[in-house]
Image (tube, rainbow, N blue to C red):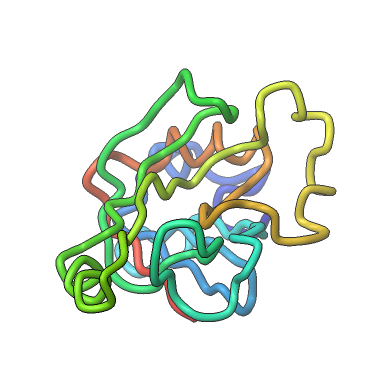
Length: 156
């Protein structure tokens, strides 16, 4: 993790909230931004087939595009989860044209409940069904820094 919220930051830095989230799939990073400045960057694990954007349910791909972090689940099967508004209208249109379901339930989440001890080791390979996974400690931090309604951009 890198960012302006490192230990020893001024007290007001701790009060900042993200107004944008940027995921760079190739770099396996999730960055929280506030007014264009990096608050924090995290290393992530992605869907089991990370190349390319999500096309349909069950393809194990993490979507690419512009979405909203629209709701959260403190009682998830993972240590907290924040829902990404996939599929958007463009995703639904593409899936309809192919005669498939676009899928859904794409989240930023911690580790499966009971597996928090894995910590950063979970990033040794991409393992989700299309979600963006961080450690339990990191999802706790993201949970506090990212309000519902925050835009997220997921790039290749």
